[in-house]
Image 1 (cartoon, one colour):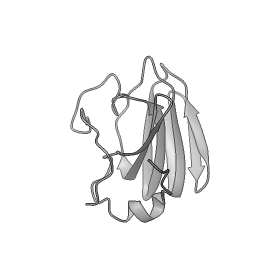
Image 2: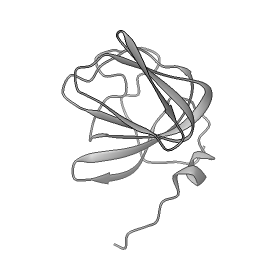
Image 3: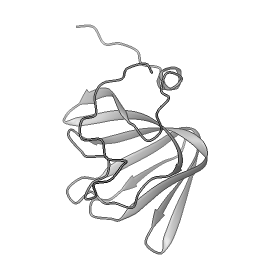
Image 4: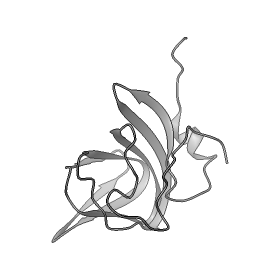
Length: 124
């Protein structure tokens, strides 16, 4: 199988559901997920996985207990395992997430944002 070039921003145009990551690629036990986000997500943590956010377009704030981190287009941030956090984007953003295979999007919480089965990219 030949490697394929992936254009995340082009693929993001086909995503209409907010906070619904789709798997773009898998490598070495990790998944690269693409999501369109706007508004506030939910407070949660991943007890056994680090999680990396990369902003491809827009802005993203990640709230932590006692402080926030602002990310602009091109910025990335790793949230260490076990750390409570809450992503938010006032104006909207397209983000990549890098996580171990099978990482649940809401970590230790189950609510309306939880996606138990995240599948491969499918144009909306």
